[in-house]
Image (cartoon, rainbow, N blue to C red; front, side, top):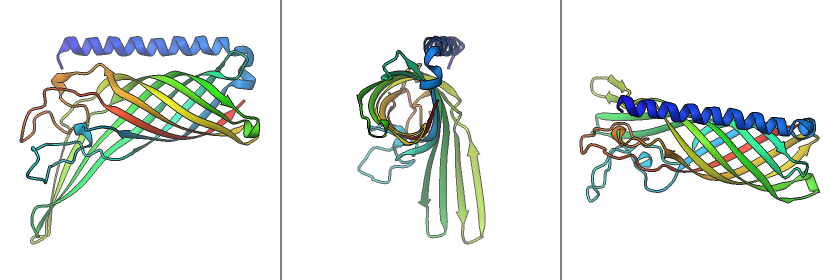
Length: 262
């Protein structure tokens, strides 16, 4: 990434963070009179699954000779993480709120490749993604039983993608030896995106709730950089080709939160 692109991304990130802070303060001021009865905080499990045919979910090496060669990220299936959210109520109807929070996902790809009966390779690819999220949430349906509600929402996200770590451990059984090669081939970066969510919330004890939701999103709607290659693959330059594009990362998130309401 050249210096101009870096400055542009830093400006975007700074503007986004400032917008989050201002909006959160405005929301908290509007909700001040209801703060004691409507504000809530939650935390719990957060998982991310990359959807579609993105190279980030492909295996490190294609073993089917009929398919074109590739060098994928290995991030297939749900990736574990955690989330902390603060909810600021808006108005007196208890239907509209502003969620603001943070989530952290540990992306890990693992693969074992037998080279021969005496040589085996274990490959590990890891990336951490930290995300700030700000949104609006509206209760579509409310029920008296367990103070339950079904809600929908939209979030704006700012995600920091750490530099990756790609390690290859080669085991030589005949000589009882192990060789480890570990390197970071892609630098850290920031991307901006959005999510649409649908969830359900219900009370399990006085002031304590369970909040379950699923959301569809785009991780890198803004800030893509083709000169870096794909966002979630180990290296821009591979034995088969050189990446020259960063595709959209479509995601599905599952969240299970325990929530405390004042």
